[in-house]
Image 1 (cartoon, rainbow, N blue to C red):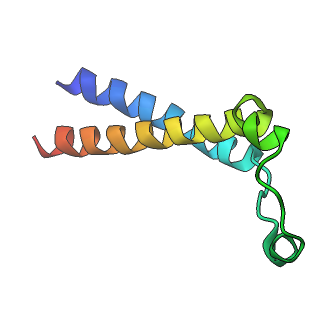
Image 2 (cartoon, one colour):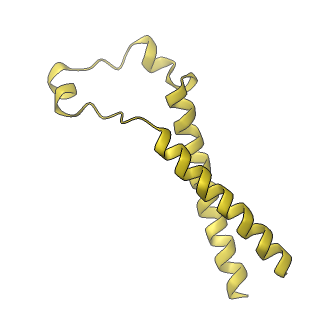
Length: 82
């Protein structure tokens, strides 16, 4: 049981560091008040293919790593209670 704890803790540390790096690589996507005033269109080629861009991939990996982070946190909490 101790070996599983150490393996999960190692994976947890790697996921934490990867999540920090991926989150820091993302650009600020908020257009703020100027976007509301100019009426940015959401029906263009870039918006339709956003998942294929670098920003889309970073967002996808951030979500995946966030879910892994939450699952590993719960698993480690259960392992340390037992």
